[in-house]
Amino acid sequence: MIHKHEIPILEFDDNPQAVIMPTHEDLGLDLPPRCVYGFLEEEVDRYATSVGAEKVGEFVSATKTYPVYVMTYNGEEICLAQAPVGSAAAAQFMDWLIGYGVKQIISTGTCGVLVDMPENVFLIPTRALRDEGASYHYVAPSRYIDMNKQALVAIEKTLKQKKIPYEEVMTWSTDGFYRETPDKISYRIEEGCSVVEMECAALAAVAQFRGAIWGLLLFTADSLADIENYNQRDWGSEAFDKALELCLDILSRCNPNSIEKEHDYIIVLFLDLNYYFKISQSSWVVSAIKSGFSAKRVSFFPNPQVTAIVLMPTVFPPIKSNLVSPTMTDWSLGA
Image 1 (tube, helix red, strand yellow):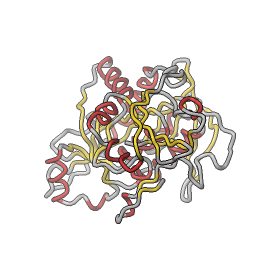
Image 2: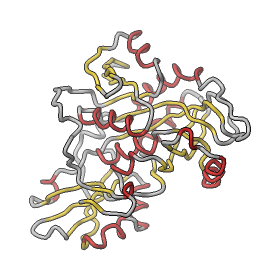
Image 3: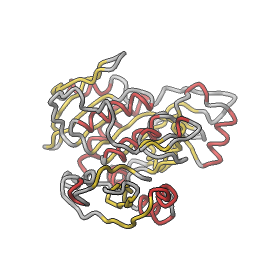
């Protein structure tokens, strides 16, 4: 159901069915559940060629065709794909990958620094400020979106094991590469953002909506710390190959069975639809989401105005109708 608003970007439709679904082409692809989805220029293709990865498909956009590879790493099949730059394009391709079987995704790429940081430093974003457009089509409007806790743990453990220093940060996800104005930069720093990029919020929202696990490993590139003297430096080029290898190691730390197994879903509240959005933003629901749960809204016949908020661990698959009620008509993310 669409929730109308004067400002179109804030009109969230929680219906999971769209006219064009990610698998509408019915390509017959059966991708492995684990995927490295990297913003790494030509590094993905180079690495795929060097390890003899098999090209199993292509994502065709209006301007470019992106190959999709499958390789074996530590005895496990891994999907490997180059992510396009920008929230809309990156979200579309990742939604497509999830549609064809991907369930655990680690991305990596560069970010600009808003505060003084050296180049090629690894960072783990734990929260993104949603200053882009794509995320609002997948998750109801909010100022921030938090990262998946299981992905965060896997990234942190890998870096600690390899004794690679890192920092946890809040990132500013924006569509406006040429609209990072001095006042905006100052405002974002005041809010706690220390880096800027273009895709984090959108990909976190896609994963949350589709019931997938997604995490991001950033590394520092250009610097906006001195607004009078922008420094593009070397775009983090020294970290590209290392970042890709780290993503492969991070994926190996994700439990391959965590998404596959069934789990009890917790129906925590029935309420009238008119109060749904107010309740879904209440402190106890927000706290549950931050603790690793996602909130779903379920509508029931014969009265579609009667709904339930369902809490479920984010590492498990989207809820199936026969697990809650034989008369359930639709479900979607609610917070």
